[in-house]
Every structure is written in C-alpha cells, then in structure tokens.
Amino acid sequence: MIVLGVVAFAVVLTYTKKFVYGTDIVSKKYGDALEIAMHFFDVQKSGKLVNNKIIWRGDSALDDGNEEGVDLSKGMYDAGDHMKFGFPMAFTATVLSWAILEYGDQMEVVNQLQPVKESLKWITDYLVNAHPTPNQLYVQVGDPVKDHKCWDRPEDMTEKRPLKKVNPSAPGSDVAAETAAAMASASLMFKSSNLKYSSLLLSHAKELFHFANENRGSYSENIPEVEDYYKSTGYGDELLWAASWLYYASKDRKYLDFVTGENGEKFANWETPTWFSWDDKLPGTHVLLSRLSFFGPEAAAEIENMDMYRKSAEAVMCSLLPDSSSATSSRTKGSNMGEQVAFFATAYSFLPSDLRMFAMSQADYVLGDNPMKMSYLVGYGDKYPQYVHHRGASIPANVKTGCKDGYKWLESKEPNPNVATGALVGGPSKADNYIDSRNNSMQGEPSTYNSAVLVGLLLGLVSVSSVPKSFK
Image 1 (spheres, one colour):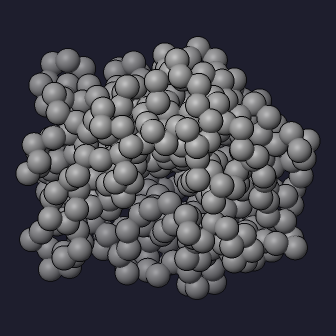
Image 2 (cartoon, helix red, strand yellow):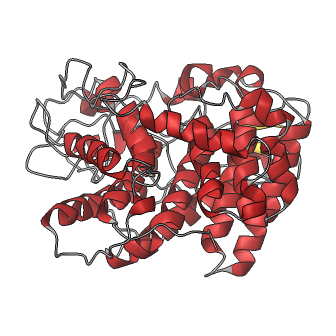
C-alpha cells in the first residue's frame, strides 16, 4: 500500500471550495473511513493507557527502558508484533504531523483533530524520552528474534526487552534525522495549542539533527539486528527531510542552505522520481520544499537549486498519471506503494483533476473497489480481513497466555476474536489476490506507518478547502 502516500498531498493546493461534512456522499465515505482508520493508533499504543478506547487492550510494556534509567513505556508497536522500532515510529509521527498541518481544519470538521493529536503526542512523548542526551538516541525496544518466537498479548509479555541506541561511537544519521523531522514537524503542530511542549520538541529536533549530521553513518550498519526488518538504504534523504522540517519550524536560513547547497546536490537526486516510504524520504522532501516555490517567502523561493525541488516534485506526480510519458509501470493499485504516493497527490497539484482522480482510485481500491470485492481497511464495509496477523487481536482478552502456548491462537481456524479496527493490512498480490490467513504476514500484517499515510490520503479527499500557505 505504498502508492497512496505520495498522492495524498498533491491535489488540494488548487481547491478553494469549503467542505461541509455530511453534504457530499463521496466525501462522507472517505470521512467514515478516516474515523475508522484513526482507531488503529489506539490499538497499537504501549504503556499505561489513558482514556483507553479499545476494550480488549490494556496496559503493557510498563518497564520498557528501566534497565537504563529511561522511560520508554509509551510509543506504539509498529505492526502485529510487540517491537518498538524507532525508525518507522518516527516516520509515522512525521506523516501524522504533516497531515494535521495540511488538513487540520478539515480534521476538526470530522471530529478527528483531537484524536490524532493524542496519538501523535503518544509517539512524541516516547521520542523525547528516547533522546536523554544530545548525542544519544534509543532506537529499538525488544529483541526481534526472541519477540517473533512468541505469540502472546502485549499485556502478558514476559520476554526480556533489551534496548538499542545510537551515539557517536555507533552513529545512526538516518534514524536520528528522521526523529528530528518528527520532532520538528510536531513542534509546528503543537505550537498553537501547547507552546512549551512545542519548544521542547524543537530543541530536541535541533540537537538530533546536529548529532545526525556531525556523526554520519547508517544505523542498520551499527545495529545489524534491524537489517531483516527496517534496514536503511542511506541517510542522505533523512538529512534533507529533517533540515526541511527544521526550516519550517525554526525559520532559520541555515537549514534552507543545507538542502540547497552541496548536501542537496549530493543527496537530492533531483528529477529522479522514487517512492515515498519509511526508508525513502526524497519524494516527501521534494514536495515539502516545492511549497516554497508556490507560497514563498519570495527570498526562499529564489534561492539557487530551490526550483530543482519543485521540478522533482512534478516529476514524481507525472510518474503517477497513466497518460504521462513518464508514467511508471511499477505503479499498481494493489501495491504497498499505492497508498503513499496517493498521499502526495491530494496536496500537490499542477494537474488537479487527474491527480485527484488517481488519489480517489487508490483510496477506492483500498475500501473495496477491487477484484476481491473486499475492504483492506479492517472495520470498513461488510467484507474485510478476519484473520489479521496481529497477536493482540487474535487472542481473547480474558485469556492469559505465555510466550509459547499462545500459538494455538495463531493456528486457530476461528476469526480473530478482537477486531483490530482501523488496521490497514499489507494488501493483495500483484495479481490482485488476497489470502486471509493469520499465517500470511506478508499480506495480512498491518503497520502504523501505512495507517498514517492512509489518514493523510483520506483527509486530502475529504478536504476541498485551500491548503494553508504557511505552517504557523
């Protein structure tokens, strides 16, 4: 489900009509799906739950971080297991912040602004605690090998939860810069409602960016345990992504100079479209910085190389359109790339009608307009996956299990006793087939980062008001 993400920010720039929720059947469909999608972040919460909305979830992982004197109990489990991986978690926060900044007014109309703020803060509270000193960042909680040998509820975990961190001796520019981007974007989002917290986040973002830039290296080279799960293919894109968000958050020209100077020339891959994902932030950076070409300030828009980001964003958008000479053959509705590319298309639009139609086609596919005639968003529609690869959803809430005896629930022929409402499963094969089996983790496992871009896409489709010219 990755194409939806890029498209979700691409259309709304040219729309000026205000949307009134409930008066448009199509928009209401996306609004209903948005409300459902938001539930998954509550499903994934770790720690001591506050105002718990999921009846089958309870407190979990309360001792995370204790062995090194840090409180890492909050945050979110990234998928159907109980691991906390900092790299995709920070990306989830950045995307949620961006969605709120672009579409916050519309989120309020559909009564989802406060829930998404609460979910975002649950992650950023964790990220703040994961950064106890300027040059140290905890990036993983749990041992993925041991974790994946268990099938139990998070509330019943007994396995040890070791910590992994990056520092100058074992750098992780990619994960540190992504966390800086999460902090900087969230600082913008909280600025109007919680200035003290916003300032705290911005301070952490600046420290993390400095750490990432001055101690260059990939975290997956220094923490080999992550290579089978969230291996980074490079850190240059995260440095540009973080600097872009820091410019918006701080208005400090040095961050703009960073992305337009030699680092931009080295890392930006201008006019070479790629797919936006937890690992590749270049399309996001191109679209984010292209705002300066549209909205200024004029001094920023005229900086050398700034126009290259706009041209690169346009190249990404052109690659989505079937009639474009640069359309990519690898784009499919059923791929995980669909969701994330679609995310951009609702906010960046030089061809608004075509891009919006593409975004709608991706969302409609997810919501049931597909050969399987099923929704891949759990809880939406009459037919959706019943055997989601998710431990907590698969085991009755009133049953206490250990690491091994829970496997009978993995192998159970009965549907999950708990509905992981809002989960966006991995999706169909290239042949548009979907096997609804708990053992089919490739197709049936949801993740928070895919849910985040789906939220952005749905917001873009619900919204037909003009995009904000600045992130205040």
